[in-house]
Image (tube, rainbow, N blue to C red):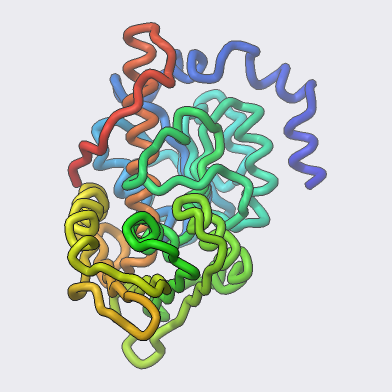
Length: 341
């Protein structure tokens, strides 16, 4: 924490960062492709590397720094082989003029992001938080991205949140008097890392916070289970709404519309079967298969949160680029999802 405070000191910022608007500073930097926003990634594990692959495919973004702690790590070597600028200076790299960026994906840990967020805010960088740090504004792309242009720190909630919240919102809107919503996700042991296991309490808290924001319901059960028997199982999520009155016919059309919204940025997202009536409510079973970029396709839990983060970043990038071109305020550039993967 003392290191972060030193970075944020007035003298350091005076020497390394002008008082001009961050977006204008970034606009003047050399080294990025024309018509694209400069992007940084901190955290060089599987999530960070998969994000890197997705950023490089985007027509709106250019990765100018992939930063971590170990230049010999698998992820760092992979990025270097792609010709992406790498650094073992962690958060310190973002103060270097050649690595100035507009957007940063933080794929480290919840504890680290709490400290990193101070730096990104001071530098005027949009932080997209891949950790369950609980300090950013929750965002689920299928449910709108107004938050992205109004906040400088966006929380991607959790993999369970991204897979369940859109469907939970449909259930809460269509079914009267929902008393409780239960979410259970099952993932492969190969697609859940030590960072997630170390932040399980934050995972549950963030998922519930996202569910409450988008459904208005106050009672939730959230579970995250690991399938030790089938190490290549794709992500499976069940969403159950408890209510005395469920009209299955009324659910169908809104559910299909929501699935289409999600599949615009997560093509492997699908409903396993029609909604099932249970004692006291209705259950919807969902699955997520990944794109297979850097992560295996069965790692849908990691892929869905990365795809959601890319959707957020592309929305912001298009809005910023349009704002720079037209000189109109950034907040005027909300749009519907029109993403291709």
